[in-house]
Amino acid sequence: MKNEAIIEIRDLVAKYGEKTVLDGISVDIYPGEVTVILGGSGCGKTTLLKNMLRLYEPFSGSVRFCGEEILTMDEKAFNRVLQQIGMLFQNGALLNSMSVYDNVSIPLELHTKLPRHIIDRIIRVKLHLVGLSEAIYKFPSELSGGMKKRAALARAMALDPLILFCDEPSAGLDPITSAALDDLILDLKQQLSMTIVIVTHELASIHRIADRIIFLEGGKMLFNGSLPDAKRAGIPQIDRFFEVGKF
Ligand SMILES: Nc1ncnc2c1ncn2[C@@H]1O[C@H](COP(=O)(O)OP(=O)(O)O)[C@@H](O)[C@H]1O
Ligand SMILES: [Mg+2]
Image (tube, rainbow, N blue to C red):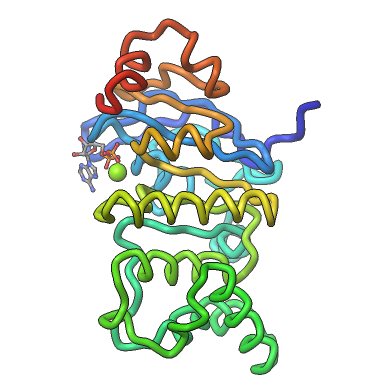
């Protein structure tokens, strides 16, 4: 059984000035799967996420979301697409002047016309989902690193996105907190059948959550397939990563 891809990327080329960072990437993202993007520091993982979501405009190529080309969409149509996408980026910090509750309310206030009591209900449900019911009125400065990421995750999921992008969500967390965050993401996948694209180097997490591995090096995709296939592909860089957990 093969579902239709949610996202189809074809021949994506990304540059910063003259420097080509992604040199013709083609990949499909399938619904209900956790896709892990792997590769050494600076290989273009964040660039891939940002270009496929047009946070940077790709140099060339095609990105289809549910069958529709997004690279040539007008802003209004593209905004509708963005509302179906959740993002948990490294720098996607909470607004420090607002409580956790108000941070999660932002996308709901911006993108829906739901009545206040429904918004209130959604905020509480999402914060419960990430285990932050107790911290609902706290401010970011009162939260631990792991709690901040959970709050940002609740905010990313406020609009029930079809797909969630996470760029090194556990970066900067201690190993236990980081494993707990990965478990949470795995729970979300299982409970909500979410589609997730995640950049992580955490071997334990990869073994727990990955359905599909995309391995980038030197602007090219060295591998795209299941985790077991990645391990038997006989690609030295991938073998080394799975042996020592580093590139
Ligand atoms: N805004 C930018 N301007 C110029 N070069 C950039 C910019 N962002 C990233 N780069 C460069 O592009 C390459 C890929 O970066 P990035 O996608 O952040 O890598 P990764 O997320 O895999 O660590 C790196 O060499 C980085 O220095
Ligand atoms: Mg990065």
